[in-house]
Image (cartoon, rainbow, N blue to C red):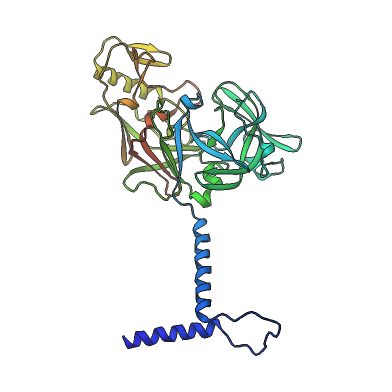
Length: 414
């Protein structure tokens, strides 16, 4: 004990000597009273605290952004998040889309856009990027419109033209300065989310790429029921606050579709029966771009035709109702009440079991009930299985890109 006391006394004495060094040259003009070693220690401690707070600010805390269904709020079949753009901030309800990279918002004066537009002229931090900017090479179909880099792209059945721009975007309480996005100048068609889109894909202009130092390319979300009227869902950004008890499957990357999140779907179960599906209907193929993706922007799950037909037929046999009708793109509909079996997507390492609320869509009057899945369209996406947002609702879906894994767990956020 005496040794410890002696050591502490020696430490404080040494610290006092070190903080008050003797100098041969005296400052004749100084009238400042020299600090005692106790005051010096307290001052250094205060500086250390400030330094630690600064270091903490460089690491994203538990950043949570509320999510709502856009159906009632902005009349769009997407899920939306609140984002603040510019200085002073203007709030936009942006659709979140895991299959797109660049963000874009309607700017004041946009032709064909909604009235809820961002007034870029009122933001002191807004700037337009020219064709010489490196980001101009990262957008689809760039052209030079005067001094601005303009890009054009299709979204669903719509097309947009936007000036490549930068401004501060704030999600949760985290401001991200000089965030690159498209300032919409023109939009045609009715697929464009009315207040813009936040790209959560894997490309160079996505939220993940532009906030890599802050959020470490990690995020998760829980989508509430599409019937929900409140912001009860959540987008969690960064590793902090992610669920610890969750099962994972490897996250795959397909060079033919580099922005998409692929996972290895190895089978589908209806009730307790594993459906007999041709292996190539589910196989991941980097050469053709085939495989299964998790997508927040598509509403209803699409399966390649052989897989869908097999699942649909087993579902019909389990329901045991002879009179099957169709409604729009749904070919398995009923005009009487049914008891639906669960459907389980079987991934390598985890299963995702869907209850009836994630499987059935009902008409407004409630007189018709349909299986909310369909066959993949006969186009470039005919080889792609898409697990869509209706099937994901009330699940926590975790994208851990650095560790190349995708996690799914049941979570009620309606």
